[in-house]
Length: 426
Image: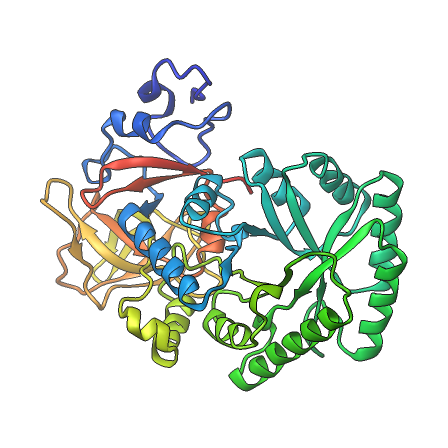
């Protein structure tokens, strides 16, 4: 298959038929160029299976989250590991995001190469080459980067590395809980880490406090953890430990962001502390754990209730009916290589027979019962009107592990015209 070169003399020839693995490697297409191709999902201009993003739903979710964040007067740094799609990073930044959260030095490098100039790496920076990547990026005076610190060994390693290069690294003190993931557990560890930071003050700047509440499961424990983060932030501010004004206080995954916003904003820090939330899956949402979490947020959170509408699933995988070998079974040309299956199997949402005016809702009794590498088993009714070549649109569970299966993802409008193309970098 011919790759799209930077000159792009013939886009249609270069990247049609569409499929994952296509490389438009030396410069992305503009949205205008994509629209000019005239592709339409329902006209079978795309090679299926294909993951597809819905433009209208993306915009709805962007606006919803920004409205929520503004209501609490906090900042948003959405977690980019969900999509690893710079096109989507830019959409989030254009809708008011403070920066992008990432998890690794490599992800940070990708984001920087695509114009992101503020990254909160919600992870420890460990290892010579990872430090070297960040050191090279810090030569860009416009790049605002933060990582997490939670141990004396890590701080000593960072201090020695960045001091030798005449650079100063910005870090957030990470708090953790017993049985959880990373982060300091108790006062003794906290004091040891603060002492190490004081030794390396010229090479490491303590800029705030970070925690991740998703390691806990019940609301009361999460609220106690959040209050601890507030107390530590208040104490360190009083002791003038922070080397950033305002200091940063950050938390929130995609499940408890409303509780984090509520507790942190009620702390009364004013202009002395900048609160940054980091949900990532809101952009595309799903029909599994995140839909369940959003339903609870709409129930318990007054701001979300006033907004009325919630988040909408904006990512689907479309595939053909490949075989109907039994009266109550259809085999779909979609497998584990195409859609996440770790948190539940894809859910049939739409049924379309080429030539119809529009897709119909999939019958409620259709369900995926098993997935293999390239095939899905779908249970159907004996009398259902389903035949080879029909197209099924599947809602997915866990967007993170669907995005990472695709090199490029088309964006469609309400008429299923392809209006953009999103490239991923995993």
